[in-house]
Figure 1 (tube, rainbow, N blue to C red):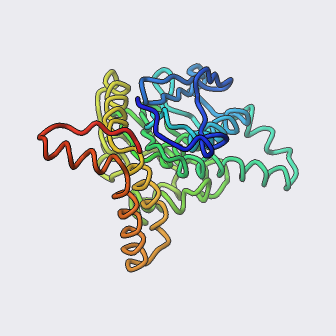
Figure 2 (cartoon, rainbow, N blue to C red; figure 1 turned 90 degrees about the vertical axis):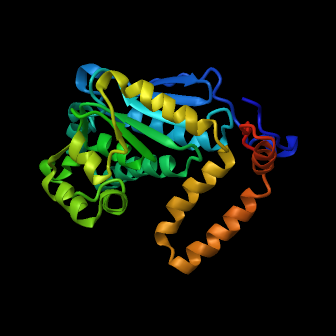
Length: 284
């Protein structure tokens, strides 16, 4: 990928590379300009720990400063996506913590969702098998979801005596599946199967299990081949406009689109169209 042009005065401290990046608590690989996160504790259905929450949060924050990655895929190792917070390593210790420590924890988990929504790269969740608790939240916080018929997504907080309002679920989930369906899932904690999830709009696509990662990577690569700056603007506006009226949204989009018209990718697309060629977007 051609590196996006930036003044050397701005690049220092504002651009980072993930070359050589090796996380301790999940897998990371780059397939061209697509980053692949693998939750890799398959023997326990890939649960999260205090450390993996924090490391995932930090990676998504860092991605805001990375040009070389234009799309992200999140998957689980083995036949499951993520079983949520580890019962022994998180749930047990939480029962002994003080209120300030509990609040520090819940804020940290929410910061992971904030970081996923704030990073400019579109995020695709590749969901197979169990996708529960915090795993369901990570899937929800992604921009797109591809699953399998055997996937089971459960916002099961109520089943452990907690509220469904966890990590932004009461804000984000109704915008994906609707208020009534979100209420069903958050009150009951029941599993949403793959076929039902597709019909509800939670899943964007369903594929056979053996096609899950190839499909997610292919989709991510198609997105990564597009205008990265414009895609980042689309993601930002999809998020920001939740709190806007229609008139505010139209004005915000007018400003956003005018900014995108100043990019070289917009000019490349025009000249390629005139020449009856496919544009080669470079993200600037």
